[in-house]
Structures are given as structure tokens and as C-alpha cells.
Length: 285
Image (spheres, helix red, strand yellow):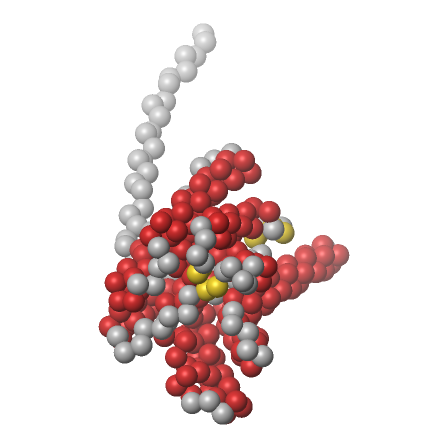
């Protein structure tokens, strides 16, 4: 007599509840765009830092459009626009030119560098730092960068610094910014002693909107920094050292050039050490 198998009722799998992302959570990709928008508003309302709204909008639209198009070509998907927005607004704030084409070209170069200048799945340069460095080097007669400082109007600066510090602390990048700021101030006193200038004049640049973009977005970019927290601090300290040397030689764009040189070098050394370690492990196995 054959046995009839009794069907077993399947237990329904529990519904997956999506994780709630808090406003200051590291997973909130809108934190950085909100911070950089606050920097723009504070700077524009206090000092009118923008060359024009149209030029800034051109840089933002170009960055987002390039991100979407290149993401579709290289990865067959729509990329999240937050990173492109940050690059575009950085270009719109930092670039100074009477023409429109530098804003378009700088934004385009910045985004393209993420897709073209890659090694082992990583892009080597912070996009906006790369675009700005290339443009001011190749077209210094037409392109300059923002050099406004907050001056005596300290409230916008304090709001941005407090908000920025809170955000980068939540995303676990505060140590990078803190190391750079401490190094910059220390080297400012050293430069003051070397060249005989008042120390206030050497410290003052870090209070401006340009440096707020630099310390909150460029040097802390997760995609273009090394993994180890200790080496992140060492690398950003070296950035400050190179910047000081360039400033002693009267380089106007010292912070951009310093990060342009040091950041990719650190990533390449990390990649080389990783590959060497993997070969050692393989040989041992």
C-alpha cells in the first residue's frame, strides 16, 4: 500500500522592515548636500560669494547630468545625484571667472575624473579638487578661485563650523578635519615666524568659505581617502605640510595642489601594500 505524502504548510517568512535612517545617521546621503547648501547660503547672504547664480546653476546641472549619463554608460544604472550636487556646488562656489565655460568645463572634468581616472575600482582624486586644480593650472589668466574670508561677521562661520563638525563627527570623519585644522594653525605660526608676517594673517584663510569646503568635503571624501584612521590623519598632516611649503613659494592655490599631489599618492601606496600583502598570503598558503 503506497503512502501518500502529507504536504507541509510553509511558514511565511517575516516581512523585512526597512531600516529607519535618522537625520544625522551616516547612511543619510543628504547630510553633505544640506551642509554645503548652508555654506553657500551663509556666504552669499553675508558677502555675496557667488560670481552669479546662473554660473553656479550651470555647474550644478552639468555635474548632475554628467553623473547620470556616465553612470548609465559605465554601470548601466542611475547614480545617486548627491555626490554630483556636492561637486557642482563646490565648483560654483570656488571658481571665479567672467566667462561661463570654466564652470561647465570644470564641473564636467570633475565628474569625468571619477569614471576615467580609476585604479582597482577606485577613483584617485576628489572630483572637484581635481577639476579646480586642472583648470587653474591650465587657464590661470581666465580662472581663479574664491578668496573671501568671513572677516568680523563671525556668526555665519560659527554656524557652519558647528553644523559641519556635528555632521562629520556622525559620519566618523571628524579626526581628519581636526588633524588638518590643528596642523594648518601650527604651520601658520611657523610661516609667520619664517616670513615675518603677523600670525593673524597666516591663520585667517582657514576662516573663509573656501576652506570650509576644503576641510569638510575634499580632505574627508570617503572615496579618496585611505582606510586606516591612523593613516588618514598622517596623510592629511602631509597635505598640510605640502601646503605650507607651497605657500612659502607664494602659490595661490596651495591647498588644492597639495591635496592633488598627496591624496592619490597615498591611495596608490595603500593599493601597492594591499597587493603585496595578498601575494605574501598566497605564497604562504
